[in-house]
Length: 138
Length: 204
Image 1 (cartoon, rainbow over the protein chains, first blue to last red):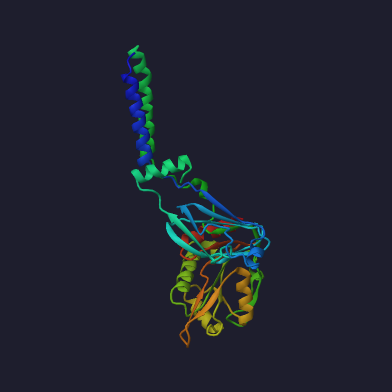
Image 2: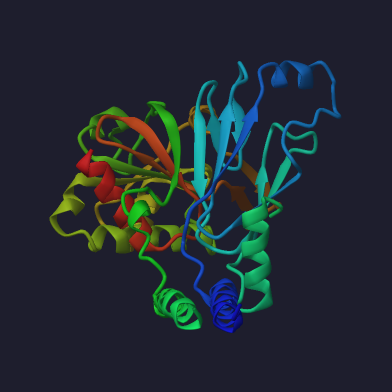
């Protein structure tokens, strides 16, 4: 059975896929990273529980991603320059790649870092980004 | 047989190439889904903006509630500020100047964090250099501290002597015409971002 045309077609498909994965522009799709400050956080902190880990010390996002902080606690929490009241969610979009440091009362050391990474450059970096997005390892 | 396979494979390969070419040559999407999303950080659900009654440059009261029906851009700072406050006020003036007649529906209120040096007259002169519509507000240190606490704003004196500075929250709070605290814009955003969000708030 002649397989050559099939192999050629397959090779073209693979080449097209690889070309797209490594070179196609990354669209400004927005992903939301939601973190919740659970009930009792403030009380536990007041009780002296210093090792209470509610949120990661550092959160990594991409450009145009949104950081969402939901305060499910019974007390207001300070995030950066603002208060998040009980039951409120604060959604902050990040349009610029940079490292941000915020005051955050949900952290023992009172600080939360947000690293916003730029869109991956064409080539291997973009291919790896797409692969990790596809496999959920990013 | 070979010809039949080729007849099937060739269009498939051509379609794959065309699809790849279309994707490769396409410009990044102009964020259609985000067109109506605010560029500031938003509170959901919004709460009533904490009210205040402070003292204005002409000795009259500055009441937040008097500005219902407008978008209020509330910022905290001091007139001796070397960089952050001038940048913020300049940006807000630029934003207000870019939205045409809607500017009449925008009120900037600048609450001092340095009542010791920021006299009403000095604030008026300082703010007028940016936009004569801007309102300055001062008060007793305790009153001002209460307002800051209600918004989660911090202000700390740095240095001693007459040339001290104030480290303070540099974000701008966006209050909608219904008096709800809708959003907070971190320092560093462009005037276009403020204009964008103000127009969204005015649209309701």
